[in-house]
Image (tube, rainbow, N blue to C red; front, side):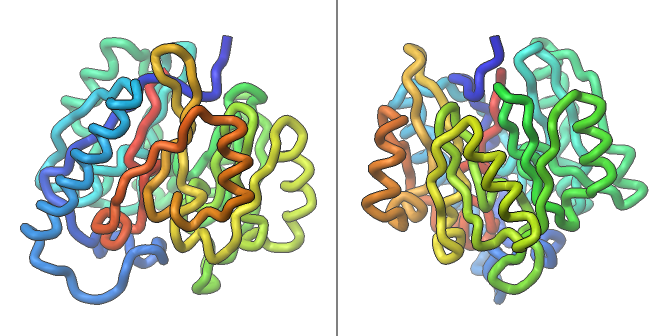
Length: 298
């Protein structure tokens, strides 16, 4: 039986962390300006990582943790692969050259002990065609729907081919961030849980909005997120289970604190608890938040 969420999450502890100049052109949530000292940023990021991991584990979430590479400033965001309930895995194409090196033989070999690697899309990087895994594609795994916002990191043709080959219905949209450019990753403006979807309609271009509203409300209760709340990473959340099967929603403390009373009431209807942890350094310099740090192991 296919499940939307899992109890087993992969995380990568950063060996180094700083603002990645190779991603900032398309990621408008990274803060412009000069870096602090890289050693100081890394120390802060590691503490935030450790606190977050401990918070997840204390709530019964099973974490598989790898040590990151010093050549990979974004190794903390393991969105270059995904696993499926049939015990297969796939590797995806990444836009930034220094993000491609995150696909280390050590991690891949370890995963292949439990998962059959059926597809590796890395060769598309040579053609400047990118599809960045679970960040580009937000999966409704139960109903076999992929939600995707087109961007430099989410190629329309490869996306369409992927959904056709794997028998997923594709719901694609175009978005507009606070800068006017497309939102770089779909998991910035929406998440899919078992019974609830959080989504920001305001960033969806008007010609796509009605169809999207129809699709997300077909199987789920919808919690709407505002355009301003996207800047606080309220859409960057992930559902997970504890060992007893209780459902949790995971996000950063910044995102949690930006939710209003009505939104919290909706989420508390469906989740035993909202697990959150403070990630200010990671959000500031990485332009990603809690969901970006978590890769599901089915």
